[in-house]
Image: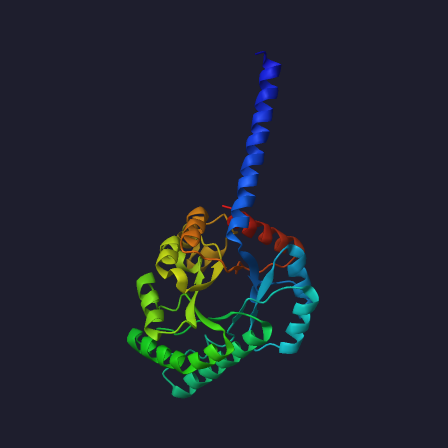
Length: 296
């Protein structure tokens, strides 16, 4: 074989291999049937609710995770006009009025806020709400956070069952539920199908590995947050700088994470909570990066 024929043959082979690889990625994404959304608080574009939703739709997202305590009719109108789904609603007051607070009056306000979040979700057609259930600190011990928050959740679970909206607990830096085994135990002790987990892949990287959590939490997972984190940046520049990295450029082992989601049979939404997207181009780039992750 002469050099010209060799190069031509090689080029054809490489093209075929690329096409097969691309086809395989597409097949992987289709097999998973996961829809992609974005968290409302991370949309940095200016404009009305409708304007932002239109930008999200144009970028290629299927839905948006709204915040609670917004103008419900305005949100519903924007949802209907843009064709976006609202799969989840994040509580707006669970940090300021945690269910673990030492003051019973604050805990009651937290319960009221959670009930409003559930009603917002039902109005939007969402299937779950995101809840930070408790905060451990100098004034609130671990066991107090556990007991108080579970007592509050037991009070609210009948409403969740009535509305058919699950309460999804998120793993965040609240010094509470720091291992997947106790995270599973916390949910199981409530003995209700209306409570589960909103698992955040980025938050857990500071003290664990997402794929391990996913396999242990399994069917308890209601929703998944797609977010990146860099341990290298954390160590060099400070804890919160770990989030200052784009999707696919941090320490998440996305192929392992996707395999774990496949293994536990996850078939719901992945919602990105990846910093502020201030332009249409940034939104589009973010959507494309989520697509790449889903195809791994």
